[in-house]
Length: 510
Image (cartoon, rainbow, N blue to C red; front, side, top):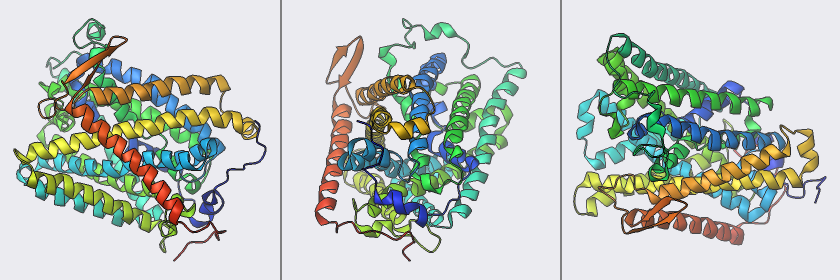
């Protein structure tokens, strides 16, 4: 069916542009993209794959990152409103699925703010070893402080906050270049590479570290490392020039691919024993090649960057709460903006939720559990983040379904803003959708820490892929399913209690 008029227009589409200021440039969008997607610590986490790490990166770029960027570019060009996947899924599948996909995209962002806080502690601990001796509850309180500080910065005038993010983004780029330069200097001094990155024989499927289904947990890691392509378009109406939509996807994707390749090489060449996957190895690589002072300076830059990543996550994911308030999927109070025209209520609501999760994981659980409190915290952290990966991959799978429906339903808009032939989007949808599903299964199958959380109760084999199940599988899958059930409950509750939608004025509520 061809729709010449949009019968699924949301209130937020009509009024959000009049409430929020247009401040974002192409450079801003690239900085946001990199902050969301490029967790350079993954360059250390993937080291156990050996030289085949590059094979996994290449596969991830081709079958996941690039299809995501192409699909997001077309959807953003056709419907550049606030809320990205929430808006697009509403256009494709209606009210319920729009909210459901929006929840699946929002929930991971809240929980990732807990992870960024732990990364700040890790890099501060690299520079100041005394930090590593903090009790678990002390770390939890510190992370809560990071999350609260991120909220304070996120509710400032958006241009002010984004300028700070841009400065830290530039420093982040220098830190990544230092990781690459350290490898060059290390080899130039006559040292032998810790691991030969050019040993392509290690890629062979028959090799114990090769590209095969036995090692497909690395594909799950790569998918996790590349999630978030669509997030900058949560702020679609705040972009000055709509050409920035396609530009940020092109430049942002290039930056991410190059950065992961350079940092992975730097760690692989310089750090002996990097196969332990310790995240601070990205700073250690700089220390080995360029000296201890340079390594510590890099660690401080990374600590600062992960603080500001928390800020970016806070303000970008708050937009999903904001539009849900405008559309009465959530209480109207969620659409409130402050005098700086920033959705402050949404920011503080998700800040409180993230803080509560932090206190549970770092204070409550270690206090009541038996055994090492560090092990208890690690179990909670790993399981929550794995569940986040599963939920986020579900939202991306929905995105790949959205593009097919929208291209067919809104043919006029598609022809007016067409970026490629429809066959391209079919290919991206199939390849990216399958990659998302494989990422989900790989995450459920492979425990991130087998010594703490086993996953060996049994297994099944499908097309040569061994899918294990056990404690890890049931915890991660159970939390993911519970989260999806919460999404349905919140939707039904919101629909039952929300007041009838009334026309809104395009002006901020003070």
